[in-house]
Every structure is written in structure tokens, then in C-alpha cells.
Image: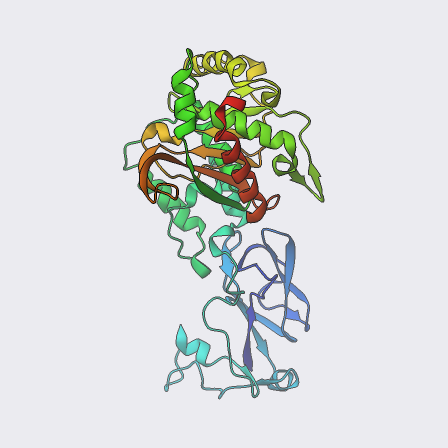
Amino acid sequence: MAQIPIIMPQLGESIAEATVVNFLVKVGQEVRADQDVIEVETNKATMNVTAPCSGRVEKLLVDLHESYPVGAVLGMLDVDPKEAERVGLDVPDSKAGHDANGGSPATGAEVMEGLPRRRGVEPTVRGLPVPAQAAGASYMSPRMKARMQELGLHAADLAGVAGSGSGGRVTIQDFEAFLAQLERHRLTPASSMRVAVADAMRRSWTRPLATVALPVNIDALLAHRKEQELKPGPALYALRALALALAENSAPAGRLVGHHIVHPDAIDIGFAVEAEDGVLVPVLRKANEQRLTHLLPKYNNLVALARQRRLPSDATGGSIATVTNFGTFGLTWATPIPLPEQTLVLGMGAGRAVPFWDTSKGQFVPVMEANLTLSFDHRVLDGGAAGRLLARIAQLMAHPGEL
């Protein structure tokens, strides 16, 4: 009799492993070709593994509720040599897999060497038998998902776990070892705000995000600010300029839902305020309809309330874009992430003196310059549209008296 393996098949283009959930046959049972023998579950569906040919189930090599990679040997069939020949398999010498004295079958590579092969066909796949572009770490078995849901964890929490499964996938054994290792470290509870920020950023990162940047001369802005009795912060100038630019064309702030761009019905702009262990985003409603001098008292009041974590409900949520001034931390360049319900976030870096070539004087002169960055949902905007919006914001900021 020849022994034919039952192999975990490729169950889909991006499927690299599956969990055994049920045995549909018993050891010793006769099966026919293409009969369902093992039920397995992937992250997409429950499917059956079939017998490669007719024969008798000699053994099952896997356990229920365990995950196995594509290509794994799930069991063995005892097959008549004629049946093996009928399906196009070369039957190895009957002594293959036994020692010279007729002892017990060999194991490991010796057994695999003794398995039948299709005539004239050499294996061409090495390593993981799934497309090279498939993101290995993204797959989680149903058992893994259930365990993570039980613990209230997300896939992002496993970013630092090195997987030992097929294609670097994190197995349930890797996960349990990771949890055991955590217990040896000092653990402190995350604040509710930190958890909320983490959840928002995790959801934001499900989209393709990109960033464009533009250095802008802020000499005029600083001069205008110096003349004001109540001095607006640089971020408020940027917020007002963004609001006016979006009032001219609201499409860049639209959200892609299915096959439609949902345009905003009001130019409500949020701004980031650092609070204890997190960030709050108060909102200035209809910022395009109010001049800078009218926005300033509201802006200052909301900043104070945010730092006290006492923002009223009508001052949060519903904004179409956010402005963040990372320059307050001395940073000149950053790539902020837009909130999940927004398409845009405008960032402003710290101002610094740089040389600028003055053509009228024929020499370099010092100017104050700051980087503006615009991070955006690349599904809604391309680089050209984002660049034009950023250039328009810079143009408006160059005339602060009109804001």
C-alpha cells in the first residue's frame, strides 16, 4: 500500500493558515476521492479539506482547535498503488520510510522524502505558499481573535510580537508567551483619555494617509500679532486661513463613503490642545464667517476649558478638520494624523530665522520661516490637490490683516 498525505490546501489568495474545527472521518474509514474529511475555519469562512484520492484513513496528524499553515500534512491515506497511479502519483519504493531492518517508519524529512510525487512535476514553491505581497502579520486565526476579544486587545497591541507561524504570523502559542512575559514587567493602567486617543489613532490608521509640507514666511504674521492688544497665537492664524480656504472649496474636507464624497455643511474647525495624558480637540463653529478678532476670545476660552477637561458638549465633535501647533514643542516638522471622522489635519512648526535671497537687494536677508504640513486621507485627495490647498492657506496667512 502507498501512503498519500492529506495536505492543508490554499484556501484563498491571502489565507496562510486555518484552524481545524471538526474531523468528518475516522481513522480506518474508507473514503473516496474528493470526499470531505476535515472541516477547517479561516478568518473568512468555514471550509472542508477533501481526500486527494480514494483510500483508507491511516492516521490524522492534527488536533482540533489548533491552527496549521497551508501545506501542512493533516493526515495520511493508505492507497492502493493502482489508485495512486491513476491520480498521477509516483509511488516510492515500498521500503521508503522504513529502516533497513524493516523497523518502524522514519520521521521528519525521511517521511516526506518517502511521500509520492506527481510525475514530472518538481515543486517550485519554497517557504510560504501564499502571494509575496500578502501581509503575514495581518492574519489572525479565529481562536486568536476570540482570545484577544476576551482580553479587550486589538491587532495593534501585537505589533511588537515576533510570530513563529507561517510567514511570520503570530500563533496562539506566541500570544500566550507574550502575555506571560508582560507579567514580569511593571504595569500601570492607562488613563481613559490615553485609551480614547489610542483607539482614535488606530481607527485613523486604517486609511491611506499622506503628508505634504510647505515652508512659509511668517514675518507679516508676527508683525500683525505684535500690533494687537490681544495677541492671537500662530495656530489661530492658520485655523482662520484654513477655514477661508475650505469655504472657497469644501471638497478637500469631504469624506469618502462608498462611492460618494460627503461634503461638509459647515466649516467647523477643531484645534488640538494638550491636556493631561492626552489631547482634546475643541471646535470653533463656522470659523469662515468670523474674523480673527471675534474668534480669539472663544479660542482662548476653549483652550482654558480643555486644559481643565471641562469642555461643553457643543464645543466638541463635528469638526471637518483640525489644526495643531507642534511648534510649541520646538518641533519644525511633523506628520500629524487626522481624526477618524476627518480628512485633514493642518500642522504648524516652530518659526526660525533662515536666509532668504532678496532679488531687489541682491543679497540674502534673514526672515522668520515656519513649516506648514497638511496630512490627509489619500483616498479623497491626491498630492496635487493637497499642495494647492496648502499653497492657498500660505497665501492667506501672508496677509494676516485680511483674516
